[in-house]
Amino acid sequence: MRPSGSQEFLEGRRIRALAYMNEGLQPVEIARKIGVDRRSVRRWKASFLVGGSEAVRAKPLLGRPSRLSQTKKKRLEAILLRGARQAGYSTDLWTCPRVVQVIERSFGVHYHPDHIGRVLHSLGWSPQKPQRRAIERDEEAIRSWIKTVWPKVKKTLRA
Image 1 (cartoon, one colour):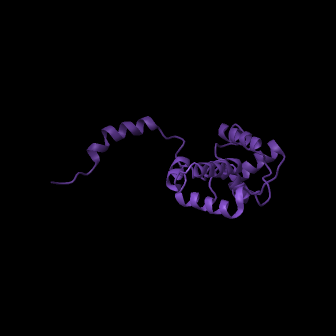
Image 2 (cartoon, rainbow, N blue to C red):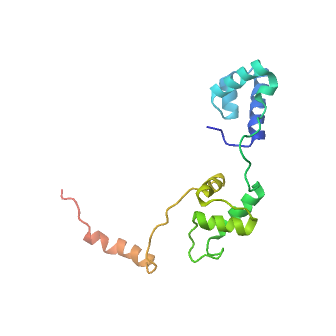
Image 3 (cartoon, helix red, strand yellow):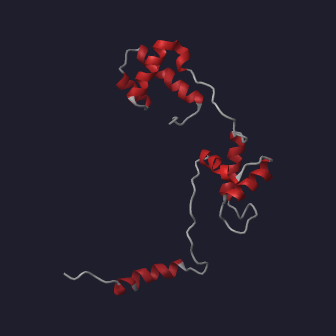
């Protein structure tokens, strides 16, 4: 699994580890300082010894680039945080088709609803199931009932 962080950040971390090696620190100490596993430090060292400094440089990312830039993704997240009602929907529930519509309206970019989960995941969002509750639900009355009536009704274990 690819570690989190930008290419520049990860490359800088590897270069810092090599600099610590030049200072004579052990891989275990370097790993503790940088916050990685000691095996990663040893792997970077082996790559450096075989391929030089070019071996620890960031490689270009493979695959198609995202259709939304980072700034557009941040704007999308701001729209999503305001809620679905603010975006013109009858309920405050975000669904993949709704997010697709918002992206098309706001940025002119089309995504298929099946793939919008990747965009949301890149923003740190995860799928959630809404809790189904009655509109008439009275939270204060429920709390009061739990404190007063429930202890009287609840079965207790006999000694």
